[in-house]
Amino acid sequence: MKRVIVYENRKTDGPILWDISTPELEKGAFLDLFKYLDESWQIYYGLTDLQEPTKPSLTLEQIEGLPEGRVREEAMAEQKDYKHELSYLQESRLQQKLYERSKSGDANAAKRLLSMRQDHEYESWTICDVVSKEI
Image 1 (spheres, rainbow, N blue to C red):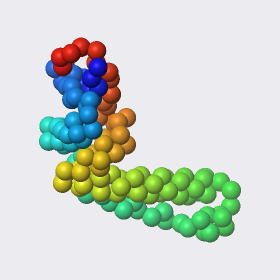
Image 2 (cartoon, helix red, strand yellow; image 1 turned 90 degrees about the vertical axis):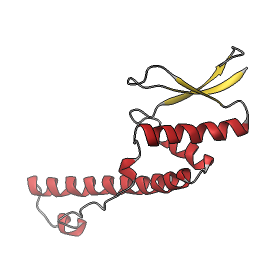
Image 3 (cartoon, helix red, strand yellow; image 1 turned 45 degrees about the vertical axis):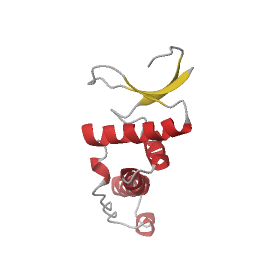
């Protein structure tokens, strides 16, 4: 029995398979899938130019001094959005490092990056067992 990575999206003609039946084949397969997504689909373009989010106009201390109402609610929403954007930036920086390592041939980094982004559009892949003797 063989194990394969199966990649397919709605714009491909059919599934693409990589044999991962041995540790060496698995490393090569994850690097090949990474290269395919990077070169054919330019999936990682967003990791090249990361921007710091804009800081909220009011600090939490300033918000606490505001009376209840719309202005305070909007300021709290701005703080919440900022924290979310900071979290996203932190994850993107990690992905950026993994991307750079993957570009230099690090199969473990490629596998980790691919796993982190598996729920992104055009980046979904699965591992399957294949009973057939031919792939």
